[in-house]
Image (cartoon, rainbow, N blue to C red; front, side, top):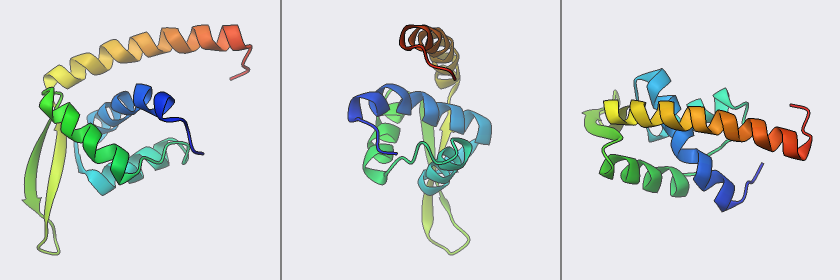
Amino acid sequence: MQFSKEIIKGVAEIIVLQTLHEHGEAYGYQLTRAIAQTSQNIFELQEGTLYPLLYRLEFKNLVTSQVKPAPNGKDRRYYHITNKGKKLLLERTTELGILLKGIKQVLHLAI
């Protein structure tokens, strides 16, 4: 499903951080596949969304990256969540849980 940019912008950061927290480290394509699989294809982040987000997360010291050679000899940039990123993830997850509860009640959603 195609979501509005405003909705995705609000949750994409937390989704990427959670995925990195669960997987340890991943390169871009691994992240997009893991996110799609975990969300049952509800979230399918495109490169144009993912990479600028990763660069912002790295700038904020929420993730780090390291270039490593892939089995095919090509270099890949692997991303890893930092302790600061884990702290923010916990804060945002708590905040989002409360927000979702309120949205569910206001909109009378049966989820």
